[in-house]
Length: 454
Image (cartoon, rainbow, N blue to C red; front, side):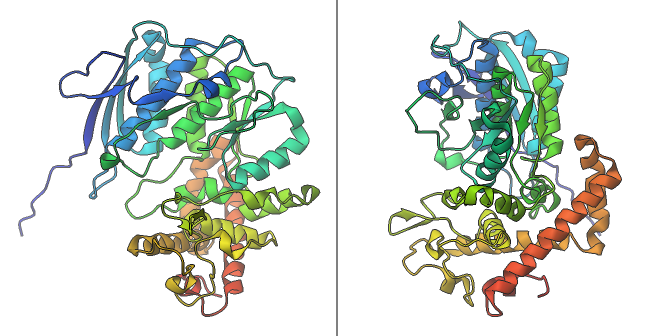
């Protein structure tokens, strides 16, 4: 029998980051700092502290260029990895090209995205614009910054950690919505830049978003002289996507200690100050975190958070934005709210009745975006919860043990301690998932899709 071998070819792109009136080299795509990158003056000024330095602006340009490359080049349907080359102008190229800085950057980025990156640096022309000289001063010394989005985990952990740290905890906006309060100047109210990407070539996996958010929170820690960056994700959200990968996709490490450990190294050698990412809720389920937060002065602030991955184009009913209710993020939210002994209004979601016999019957009849992709999202959401629960079985223990052997050193734990904690977390997740499905009744489409026994 003759077997024909095909060479393994990765999608490839070469990008030159160029300043105004400059052109990219032949065979290279231009990322124009004047056309593709927009800085928000107000948001950038919320990063204005006495020790503002050009390297901070450079770091944001580097993150923006990485995001542009990640989102511009589509992944192949036959594989995951791509080759992405970037040439970026910075104020001091020797600082960024130093062997320890370059190695740490490539290590963190390659580990996060599963791609092959080649990043080089050249001298930029002229000084970059800086924030207003009206520097922002914090009233008290900052002990930690918290990477804050619009999600349930970040709001809950901000409340839990803030009850102890008070004003020594500073939230850093890493979500799409900034702080609209204008009563007084606040630090880190929004991600200070945005990039423009062609809709026809957009890659949706967007793994580099984890690098963007980690770097933004790292800059905030540097500016406030904080030594800790709080990652609010629960164990399901931080470890689950790496432990249970989807199809041929590379494991998702965006909120994982193995990734943040690499970012720590990069920030330390680039900025010269030690910083540490901490995970106060890593060994808790999202439901346990929510229950503890809700018990603080009977807080109901969690109810207005958004967990859904879908945007307003796909999750609106009669012009009102809802959460879809069935993607993996929404399913984890539903399970967690149930585990915490709380409830939400059915019309918070597009899928209003999870006890329905079919997904079509579960969806609000006024929802106009029903299609096959919506059902695929729902199936993936249920199966992610179910497969993560499967990891609590004894048959999956070898895989859990292997993951714990890698995870332990990143957290300063022995492999055995990490394995015990991870196994206990998975057991509690499996219990919460089983209890949630039991609450839906025997006819629910969720129970028909899942394999977990009731």
